[in-house]
Length: 311
Image (cartoon, rainbow, N blue to C red; front, side):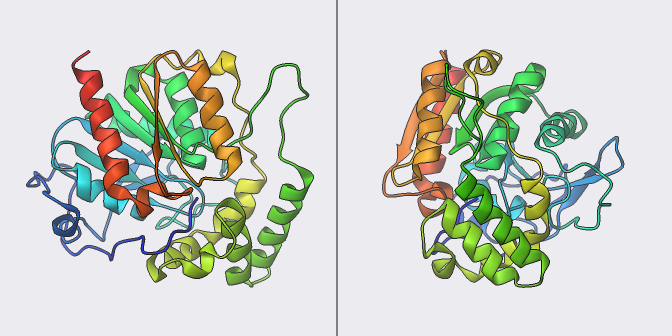
């Protein structure tokens, strides 16, 4: 989950249905007026609805957001990549705009991984090229492990979750991090949402990033603040080489040159564990590299997919 200045584009203004045939989008500025402010929904077996927005035609390119985000996070990617692909950005269940799901329904990275597979099956245009960022990277990683039939390629951008090192005790977050997250959740649940979000965002990006964020990003994070405490009660699993071996598709790993060390260590390890893995680093960017430098981020994804197509 990032907080980046000059990031989230303004909402778009025209309707977009699931099967609408859109003209390919030439650049980000033209796409900003072609994406829909109102999502389409796919109902899952558990009765929850999964919102999404779509643009373009071609092979399915599916985007999975991270903490405090939703389908709006990927606007620069739908804008820049829909000339060549059928770009779809989802909101995982419990995230905006469907925020009224019952507290008794599980909020789980594992359930989200399986729901991505169910979404692709019900959408009907798979298998998909799947891109996941931060917590969404962890979700996408385990989706790809479990559901090989639904994935063409996998791109993980600063994937979230701890790293299991051979010979060391089971990986878990440091107590200082857990204490900070507990404080952030407490602030949000007691009504001081701004302070809680600032504490969390600055901890996963850099101090001061929340203050520099755009109004659009802050609005999105505020809309999803209710998910943070539930997320903390469902910690992400550690990455292990045995599980990485279950990923049988081509993988692109993307990190930011200035991303926090915890993300870069994970990318380093996955690069060594994944025999079919490639890596790109977005220069000058931190955790929200797809927003800070969308042209570079989009180019890396496009070049990777095209290279895999001709192998």
